[in-house]
Length: 427
Image (cartoon, rainbow, N blue to C red; front, side):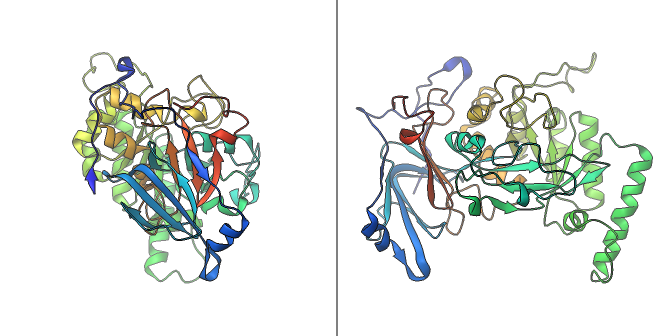
């Protein structure tokens, strides 16, 4: 077990990208699929299938790296991670020699990959709108994204039409992780009267919970779940004043707070740290400071670095675009918002001074914490979902890409077999 060692050479220095892992000679990731007899041999009691990812540098996601390590998976879960592990006879083996083995990337906001276009409608569940053959789902896997948060339109001050979904292309049974996944509260934009009405709803719901939840609930299920802290509350708060108001509101009702588009959070980093909130920031967003308040307003590429120094957990998103999902990852909007660029947001966070470890955590384990599913996703640890991406090297190097993406223990994407990317020569 060894700590991550960062090489000294920095390719793409103008962007401050982390170094790529250089592998001598030509290399192509080999996915050693066994024949039918071997696959039958990989079955254990209860029909559990075994998969082993071997030979790569395994980045667990918590700062630990196993050089030439092994990840063993059974029935969609990780059962062991380490060096010199015995691979069960008949297991399907994925050879990742010379590559980085990473937790599947977790996107804190996304749209239009794995969901039927125009859905869900009001009152509809994401479970009923899954589209496993969606091209966006395949592209998400090509980018190493194995799970993401989706949210419908909020009508009124709050809504819980939210879900955590795996873009499991061709495998609908693997797609739904959790629904509802969060309570979205439009606190910053709400009027004083709407805030008062919502406060009363929360207070009634608190009394209902304290009384053992007997009788008819005075609030939607998402509100009850948020008060019980089983799902987070997400508030879009871009300015420092909105951020402080969101923190005060969450503290009043003891809510798990995730602050979306928290691009001025750097100016109130100590207050955010004390609150325990998780911030979603966009390193490339540019917003001019208020005249005369240049030292405490506006955006800065150093936001992630300042939050890291203050002890604030953060995750990352690209710049927003147009439409109903202005800050999420999708195929629409402005250039640079494409699914395939998600890991590069980490490179921009590093460019602003954040550590490579924090940036990698931002698109894996911290993002899973923001979604409230860190017990299942975000790191390669025993008992968690076997969501794994094998990368050509450092994911923050713009020249590299995913070779293999595994969702719940199944190989669902291989670059060499992709109709879109198989022509690209491996590095």
